[in-house]
Length: 85
Length: 402
Image (cartoon, rainbow over all chains, first blue to last red; front, side, top):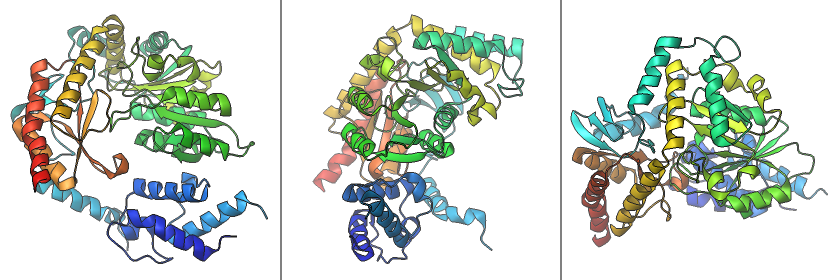
């Protein structure tokens, strides 16, 4: 089972190439607003997350996913769906 | 209190920086339009190399006359939607003519190309369905997807195996599946490996929509687009197109063979809740369509011009958006300030091209985007090449040696 901390660490690693202003990340960081990255970059980042975990995160979900913590919750949920215990 | 427009502060600042560098790259005024390839901009005659006027067909006397006659016969506007008072004989005649041109059983005309994608995608897919869209899709496709309420899965650009991976992850009972592709992608000018996507269709059983906005009139032995070129029209369930590029008018269409197709007229909101296209736009579209069918040499001329521009840019050592010849020839630039500066230098030297910057571009690219027209003369293409040599290649070489 992948823990929330592990997911958060992975997300931070995957986000670095998009974080061109070098903003320090926290679970409360708002991905688009705080990092000043545009909507396409957010979708590109999420695609990296999808590939890393071999899950799909539909674009509809993103409209309600603002912070890193929100995205951790989404990934956690998708991983549970993928491998029901 | 939060003011609603406050959230656009970064856009306001970005635009101010653009204006400080010269002309208004995202609001340039054509003071007069002289021909498909010439206009008066900033008081001087300028070569147009960013119009999407692929067939160079906006000033044909008989097409203009057809528009004028429709204005006189049917009036300035229809004042209503197609499902109320806005259906005229010219609308249904254009739909029949387009269906025949496309070799499809059914065709619906929309008021703009943007609305064509909005209507077709949101009409076909609903909240229980899934749409798979290419990452580099045009905004009208993204917006149509959002309007549909469907589950949206984005796949890597032109990457059929990546789509296959995502299709394989789908649950069996997840409703209908729609895959959306474009015939030619508008920013880089590249096109998808359609046969690979069709192969996936056989495996996974989705429905396929191809937006031929930039490829209609341009690709295929009949000028019907990518599916025509690939000989795979039967496999493409739905085709979308626009009148604002090769047709040189405004409006759009959707077409297909399904016997239920016409139900979209009572299900697609961007069709139902907007005024129908004006008589003049419909009549000119009809007249141009007849000319395109009768004049395949326009396509030949377009490809000759495209090849000349593509190869000329390549010989200048420019970094291009795609490595195949295409009527869209995009030059990759290092960053936004240098792109804006070069765009202004080109305009001052007498040529207009499009400027394209993120998020309107894939992979955060900054582009000087040219679109070629069949109406460009060889001298005009050579002048564009000469100016890009002076402005863009020179800047490139200065950077390389710095």
